[in-house]
Amino acid sequence: MRGSVVLVGVVACYSPEPPLGVPCDDTTGCPTGQICVTRGGAQVCAPLGSGDDPDAMLPDGPLADVPLDWWNTAWKRRRPIDLVAGAAVIAGYSFAVTVDHAAQVAGGHALASGDDLRIVRDDGLEVHRVLDTGASFDSASTTLWFATPDPIGAGATQRFWLYSDNPTAGAPPALAQEVFAFVDDFEGTLGRWDVDPKVEQTATRAHRGSQAVFIAEPQDATGIGLRSKNLDLHDLVFDAWWNLDVRTGADLGQSVRHTATSVYFTNLQPPSPTWDISKLENGVYSQLIAPPQGSGPPPLDTWFRVTVYAHQRTMAVDIDGERFVPSAGFATVDADPSGGIELFGYIVPSHVWWDDVTVRHFVRPEPTSELGIEQSIL
Image (cartoon, rainbow, N blue to C red; front, top):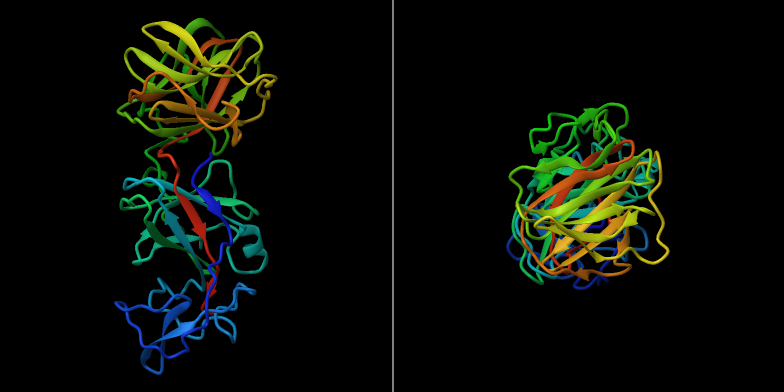
């Protein structure tokens, strides 16, 4: 899903001044470009390197002494993650960070399983992190999601650290429900949904794991699906994976702000099915934003990703991570109620499968997560 903008490898311009030896502690800290270390029993500021070599944190190589705020010395490497909020975000807001994990693994600096990748707040609090539903470990673009435990004010920054390089690391804290406002991979029960008849769990196709949900029989203008229980969000991002075996004549949707009287959704609608933004209010259907001219239909027998954004009176839809409707930016719609989410089929020529649903809070402008230069205590 699109999420917080990730700037990989951003490095501040560090200055080697003032010279090594300025006293420091947890209260006073160090000047820009310095790090607080313990040497000879005293806490002093040491200069960071120029950044030409990611390991060259001090002029003579990696850190000669462990910084006072190092979370756990079993982890030998870390990179700062600065969360920068343009608009204020609430506690539990989800952030993404993308790293070249394959390069770390190839260099012997990380486990291929990803178990040693840990995200820790600047005060030492480790938080849950989960792999993006479209990503993998040991990849050049491994994306992890985590949530900030505290609010971040507009224009403020909160620092976390991405730790790695512990060959004996066990399983990390990785509960998706600690990262997202709503999540379901359909590996358990369907207890978080109101489910219509003929919507079932299946092992015939799954995006990840062994289970998905699908509409088990063809439907003709019946309008069946599954709707979230106890979810009432105003501004959100709703992400789900789809798989179709027939698209001709299909009339399917992924909706947000589902209430008793209205719903807003992206609609895959005949005769040449492609994505729009529509609403159903008091039983009356209307198309709000037409598909971009020349846009094509979804693939067959292939998992693809549909992401719906809703913020105040605007909406947008991504297909496989690319803005689809409107063709750029966000479109203004005519109402902004809160409500739940839904996956549904009005006309289903054969079957449709869904898997790996996530919902997260959303503000505009989205905050960013800036990934800085690596530090090492080797």
